[in-house]
Length: 145
Image (cartoon, rainbow, N blue to C red; front, side, top):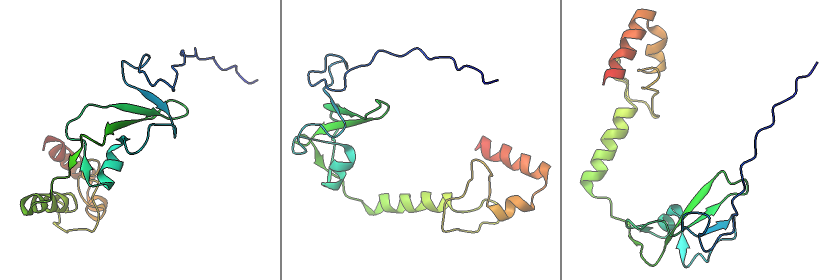
């Protein structure tokens, strides 16, 4: 016999069309695909595509998805600054960090992809060759680091 599902209490719907920001703590809110002109506001990704960054500006408006579960924050294009250029030191630090994520700490093999170091602690070949005690010891060492 099928059991009855308990009904969830519905939360009061907050209007998605709120250009004054009355219901969203002063932040103007628009429904999906109905936002202000792209010349005025843009998301972080749109700013990056234009070669700009938000420049520590507060969120000026937001776009809410149909179900209200996802939100896109909008920043004014007028106050955006150019993206900082990649310096040689930053490029070197980024390359070192990516190399560390793709290097096995046991066999020191460098792979073309990031290894699951948090969950396994090493590459798959080393992980399959370890015993239970060695695996637990490795996980304790990587968790402490």
